[in-house]
Image: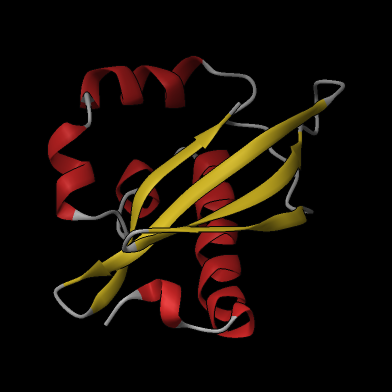
Amino acid sequence: MNIIDLSDEEIFDIAHPLWDDLIKFSNKGQYGKFIRNFSYELLLGLNEVELGKQFAHSTLSRNLAEERDFLGLIRRGEHVTALYRVRSTTMPGEWLGRMVLGYEKGEVRIFAASIF
């Protein structure tokens, strides 16, 4: 199955809870729960030392507002990118959140996630 074949509504039903979990576990610094829906490919490419430092030292990644504005979807190949406007509870301004989803062994997994 290819995720880009799903309707927007079907993708929303998958993407929004996954994004909300990323925000929740990032704020709590719960690394194991944060990465639980990552694809095997993404996990292999992570620099766990750097990610651990981010959890320990990043003001932004530990203070993300739970409220988000969904901006849109981008379909490409076998992946869909969900874009969100993100805010901090402690820092002024807005950031762009990006989460790339696709299927791995029959399950939807996160292939990339970032905040710019």
